[in-house]
Length: 515
Image (cartoon, rainbow, N blue to C red; front, side, top):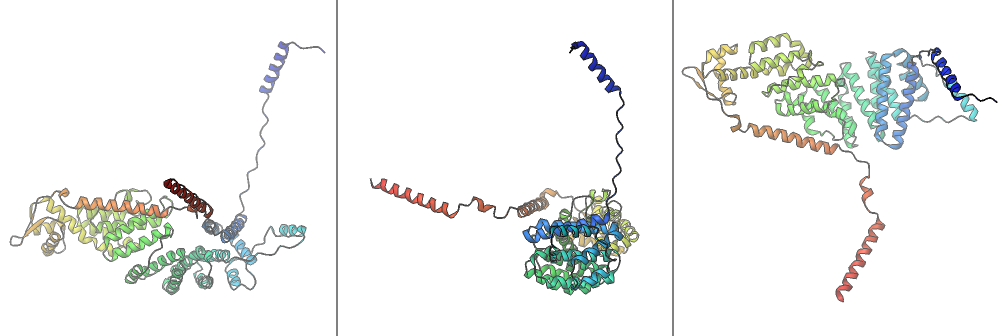
């Protein structure tokens, strides 16, 4: 065969490469757009995932599986809110297949939902079982999964506005939970108490469920049920506060202890309720401490627990003003809280400047907002703080001023009360001045050095106490694997071997001493 020269081969290869480069590339095949997922199929898959998580939790007793099932329950509720028509029949089908014909709640649950949807995979499953040569026995429904399905129906009724049916189902649900005595049911029973109380609260009958909550609280304390104990305590405090029974709520706080192992969400609620109760009972320092801790325990994400953090900020701002402090500006400047906090910003400005007229205008303009937030009684107490702040500014600006002129500057309703107001401010240490009763003159003393007083020491002590408490909470929150310390401990054989070696060494030393 003839051989081609190297130059000819390189030229041919160059021409082929050029032809390949110049040839138009084949057009890519157009991909068909993916069909949107079916909400019913996703809902059915989430129910099965929740059932698998519950079974693993009951078997292994690991809390993470229970948390996964509860998160799936929240996802199922959101799916039901987004597309109620295709998901509720799927829930009805799951209840019809899981609950036996003799179950006491089967008919009630199915009556509250649309007709069950047909299972698309039923035929395939039946064929697979036939090929295997037998029917598999149906697994019994666990009480934990039963409670999740019942809670989904209760939430669907509450979200749909069917409160009378929801109340009857909540009563049956509470009786059902009280009849069980399973420790694996505790995380799910907590949600049952919470949503049942919520149904009664939306119906305006929260007092009707209080006795059941008290009985459940006693039972949870006897069983050392931490989850239900924390939730029930918060529900009882909310029930008392909604009925304006603040004395009973304070007695409940005094006679009960909040569990240390409770979640941050329940701890934040407990601290908020405690702060509100203490504020109404004039214990402003303790109220400020609790509200500050509640704000720190709340989720720090800007998209989570927005309503709770806003409510805590509103109450905290009023408590700080009652303490004589000015809240931080960052609370009023945040984009998510700027508009709702505007009425409270006007209060802060009036208290800071001591302008009683501006305080009256803010009260008249936003009285409905303060009443809706439940802070109207506390806002009325700020009048004395406004007068004190204005009197402090007057005493700093004037070394001598007539009491009638001071009353005019403060815009008091009754100028004759100026002398008693000034005397009380002097006694409380708000201003450093004296009153010439014969001449009716307020005489201010020179400004004192703050560092010669005990205020810096008190401020440092407050900060140090907070840091120490934060360190203690961090140490308590540290988690370790179970029995992790036992790996470093020697076993019985090692201990016996070491003792034998020590005994031999002691005998050898004794023999050397004899020689």
